[in-house]
Length: 630
Ligand code: ZN
Ligand code: ZN
Image 1 (cartoon, protein in one colour):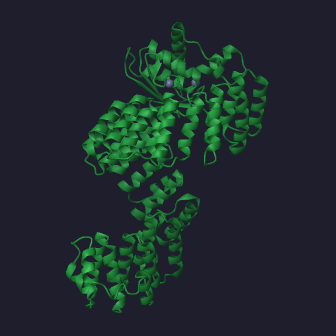
Image 2 (image 1 turned 90 degrees about the vertical axis):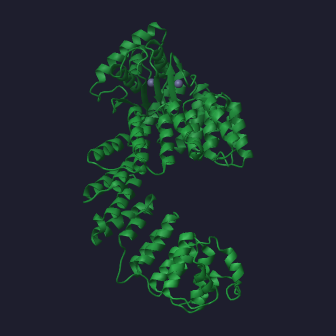
Image 3 (image 1 turned 120 degrees about the vertical axis):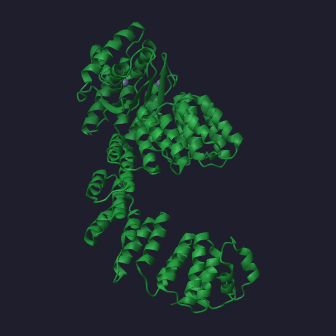
């Protein structure tokens, strides 16, 4: 069995084994919990039996004692001991545990006889290291070459976790049919992994079907389904599924709560989030830091920075870099520039955790939100000094920063000097800046480039169309619309959400679907009358159609965030200074809605949070946290 060949591979220096100095050996022992007498026997070349090898290999696995385990393996070879399938599999597990996957694979390849456990151990090794194609290839080899046994529930469970990406999904569906044939389909672990595979590939309906077919369910399969919905941004569905499971008596683990909090953050469903927070406090769960980080993220996405900060402070020395980043991103998104700067300084003073690329991204976008381009450039340079390589997002932030502050030509220069090709997102942000600063010429050039890069993205056409509209170039605008129609570019329809009594209501632009749409619209009209008295003037430039003024005003009133606001004003307690209203929008809020909400917050004395795709707006007394800069 090629034993000596293997020894040479493992101990490349030929003299390494025969002339082992026992002293050297004992000093290299990483942990004195290793079974020393046995180890000494191995060193001195004593004959060892199965039990001895087994015992010491188990210790080596437990302690990840690579050098010691390697000697034991060498001892087997030197004494011509042929290990049983069981012991060889222990060797695979040992090398895998110590991250020497090639050595593990060599053991498998040289085994005269194998069983399902040896193959599964190797496949698990690949899959845990994210070597998905190696895992899948080995699985296929196993199917081809093994006679008398096939994959078991553990093999299937592990290989399914390697089915990611397009190719993985293709393999995954084939494995599914194999499962049906071999009867493992209904095994609880296998079922959960299969469900997870479909969910991760975005096939949530298939995932749900697998779930429905499972004869037995547990917290793992339920959580996989919830997290599948949450990861696809189907937040309402995730919460619904969670509620259903709870009424059916499902228990929760920390992964369940983390997935649920992701969904709640997505909807900015504050009341729901608080309720889940209470549940988490009552249930003592492991991995508290993970959950606390999710809570920080959830509260800041709901605009409740003080809640987020309390949780952050209570973490004390358990804080990790994710906790710091969650808090910094929270401040940044909410436009609390000073708070972000202070915390960033504290992070550097405490010096226990080093800022990473996410930290710098948060700080860059914080300067962007604050409109402080010089500070932004400083942070970018600090990042370079600290040898943190900027990624495309960091470059994007800088371009955004310069563009917003009107330094369009500096932004163009910066893009030219970037070591990576600018993405469509970066050009798009510059196009946005052209609109704000009425740079029609450059805007047209960028839009043309973007049309090549991403012909499907309606957002670019909309910005260019707005650019034409604000410059009064109606003819160009009409031509653009015609081009859009020819290419059948669909503009993503505007949608807004609001949570009332833990139910999430969705409104569409010029809504015809929500049962309370008329009431909501009436409320918007009523608010319009009152805020006009206070000085509000509709910004008709926000309408991308060449229609008369009255029509334009009507179109503006139908914007989904206004409808959601009207609905919120009716159904959340409405005394002056009453409960805060929280609205989410799927697109960027327009200038007119922004000003509308500002006036409402002042005239009605209501605190309003509005979160769009770009950032969070917090309106109090007629002023927005973004200082009209977004
Ligand atoms: Zn609007
Ligand atoms: Zn704002």
